[in-house]
Length: 100
Image (cartoon, rainbow, N blue to C red; front, side):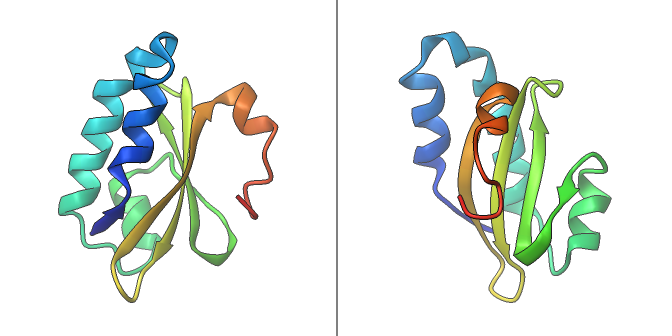
């Protein structure tokens, strides 16, 4: 998969040192997704059973033992993953996951 953009993930922990513990789990997710070939939500669920599949290609991943949430938009036809949001559960609760 092509992931846009790793810089969004990096900014999360680099700009907020209190979230530095998200670095390794997030990079592990990135490495896995980079080598994945997700052609449908079923493929995502096979790789990440705890992922939440939402409407219109959106998927929510639990990161670092469910401490953080990662929201992506996947274009399955083109094999592109767009990072839309990464944050704590509290921050996640403040967004509209379908429009972010």
